[in-house]
Image (cartoon, rainbow, N blue to C red; front, side, top):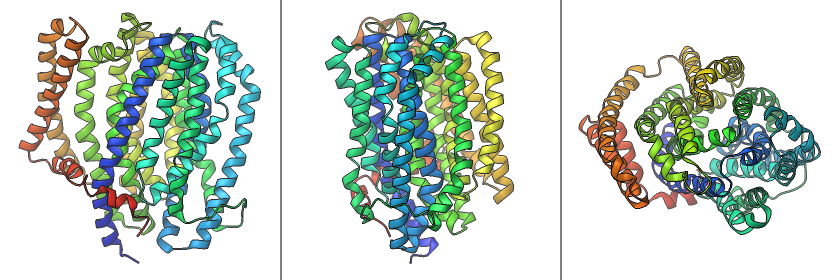
Length: 535
């Protein structure tokens, strides 16, 4: 068995190479997600119909996030990784089959519940929307999408298995498949089926994103059997962790639901507008922050399993500094260029200038929280790696009350954009609270080193932001002459800003620049890492 130090060094090399793959594939997925929203809003605008689809998909996706993604990240990966390290093949086989069969049976039940009670859910949502939402359209889309709970959730399990074996490409590619299928079905069927076409495409895409991952599961060398062993130690452990994890992540999703309810009550298209703005903000966040965290988490899990506190601190410091290095300039750019970005991406056909103004304002306030969203993922996963799910739960439960109050307060002044500001502030509260608790648990977290890096990042971002602001102010009148002028000028300003930012961080001799350069330098060797099942 490799010792901890060797495992740590090897895993750091894998962070560089595997993150490049994850970044590229995730970028494709995020761009295709934007394209999906462009197609949807171009065909249907932002209206109660698109709100109905947003809710029809949100409900099954909520269960997937709660019971699949979160449980897999917080409990399955740490347990499975420890078994792999100990090479307990028979226990792994029993564990995998038991978890798979429990999930299949449970999510079939949830799918049936959603299918049966879709009319009642539709009536409730329509009342919140001042009886203006089409209940029949919602019920049809909800029932079509109800069984995506099963496909999306099992896809989350397969992703957890593959990530534990350091395979990231296919799992990262899966959302791209879902988005492309959704786009195709809207283009092909919207003239006949209207908004229903997007629900059909999403359901087909959710099934395909599971199917493409299944062949890769041969890396686990586990033969499937319909067996559930509740006496298995790992099965009992994951079941014992399930309730606090669900309550913790349930609190987070309650916040999301509260935001959507407030938005729905404010008028047609507001739920859709929130989702669209988040999709744009999520492009830099999802591509870079989540990519770093995705490949860092298996290392954190191994460090926690061996009580390598020094390694945990180093991983925390690395993750925080890299997220800051990427997200702070991204936030600066999104805030300054929110209106031209939304105008370029969405303002065509049924998406109006008024819609652009609304979504751009939401984007500004959502962007402010990006750095906190990234840090929150790191903090939660460190606690989960220690199998401590109660602490994030307590913090998340308090955040529900904070979120409800802030939503109620800010919508009085900012309308639906107030919901976005509330979300960002709640994320900041969670980060500050969990950081304080983690520091008490493990000691100093390298705050001076982090603060030094963030000081240089803020200065470089400020210089970049000034250049972007004055460049756009001068060129804006030319950008709106036609579409190509808009694309070329906006893209040129973004490239100018990124170049200036990288230049100044290089001049400041930031360690984080070397990390990013190493990501791309190791691209060539990343394929070899992909094929290695486990060490």
